[in-house]
Picture 1 (cartoon, rainbow, N blue to C red):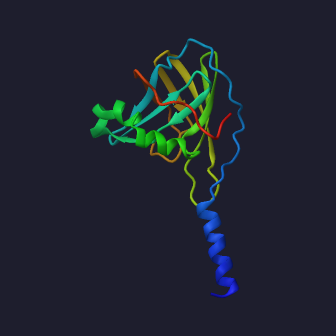
Picture 2 (cartoon, rainbow, N blue to C red):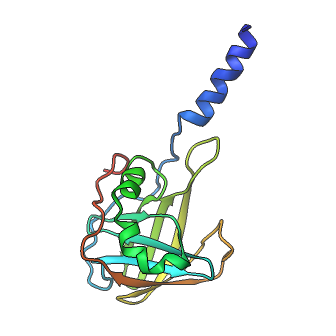
Picture 3 (cartoon, rainbow, N blue to C red):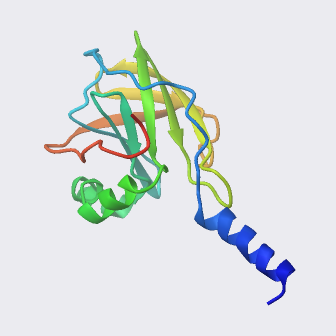
Amino acid sequence: MNLKTGLIILVIIGVFCCKVAEPLSMDREDFTSDNLRIDGFYYHCDSVYCYPFFLYQNGLFLSVGSIGIDRFDLMDSIVTDPFVVKGIRNTHWGWGVFLVKNDNIIIERWLPGVGGPYPTQLLRGLILNDTTIAISGLRGRKHGSEIVSFKFRYLEQKPDSTNAFIE
């Protein structure tokens, strides 16, 4: 192998294997309000998938990706599955922070990245009541920039919010 080929291989390995993340612009703050329930998860379903996420008392946000609508009845067990949780705990993707001011919520989270750092995404929403949030700014889904409502679902035991990325 010549030097040029070796350098190209090292660059490819560095780009795809050594993922870093863009820094979050928001700081984590404890959630002290009572205008949202956090003893479960919020979700939105379209005709194909459901998109659940968790909000934690310590100000952390966790998205667990998407779950096929045909598996809605299994959503509680899927979002707490040890294999799923372990995978999430070991990557930036899905983690973020949230901040609530009056009836507004701001979420900043990491998105999956391809070939570079995990990019961040800022979402803004309106708290309609303690079990419904209307969020705008979703990208990468067919929803575009429309406002999407997320409903609350009680869950006896949420995944732990411990991760190595947010203090």
